[in-house]
Image 1 (spheres, rainbow over the protein chains, first blue to last red):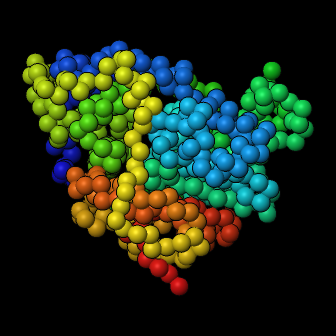
Image 2: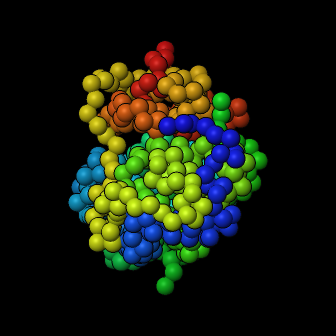
Image 3: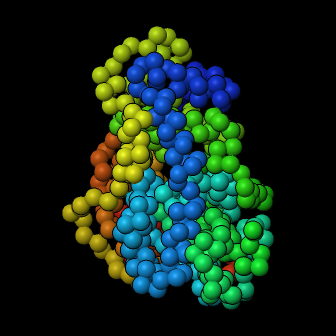
Length: 210
Length: 224
């Protein structure tokens, strides 16, 4: 496969410049050629809009908070454990879960593209895919955390995981104090998407929404 | 020898702008772009490394000005033509010729199964792991593909020539430097390698903070 072109050789220049029209043009030609089923596209969109998202990750986190054997197994072999819960699939074939403690805070990024654990968190938010996050998370994670309103104690070390291979990472956030008597459902509401990427912490119960 | 996508550590991008409650797809066409890309990928004419490399090969000017899903769409159009799935004339709007590839079309009833099956990247390999947890290693001095000049690699420039230690062994995985160029899977040992911040940055926020990268054995050499 050729690995380089001059700008004017790129076939994409043949498509309409407006992005929505560009997508429509590709969908149309591929459909007319019998290569794409528009109903399959609807099903893919429905999957990631309604079926696969951060609730999956939050389910895993709450299980780890409330079941120490589950947590140990998860930290040992996350792929096997989340597969049993039905959270295996595209962009989550090789999972590793990393645990936040008082000593270590973990953060996930993909500097080269935007790799993200889809089966557990869904499609990444815009900021995760932004140049600013990709460029800065590895060099100045503490300043990036402050963009999210998070500040860590000076003696907490930060580990930033740059997803350069097909391994996908999920952060196990610390369980907030004062949550010992909470139900699973209430605990789920404390686990934000950002807390599982490491740009946030789990919510304190007094700050949780209704 | 660098590519615009390799932006880890770059200066000048300004603040990250978190959004707590944005919809999954901020525009209808974003979801459509993702779905067209996945459905076209299901035709089996390229692997994930080829498709990543197609985005990285966008000209720096296009890469910088295109939004995320515009990159996906443009790279997809390029790949469809390069692999012969579509002709340039068809892309321009000519009546499409029928193709045997249509037998591989992803149908709506197969979507769940296909997404749930995923595409694992681990493969058996005859290459034995050279390193163990705790071993000190140094990355290639220059982050470049050794098989194809200017080709795809997953060693970011900011971590080139840096010394760290092996944190985890992930088993043997497809080597993107090879697979992105139709040169085979070439699986080899893959490790999580930890680098102290002061190994990577002139002015680290905290010397003992770490960055962990997943790196293939051929990116590494023993360090004392």
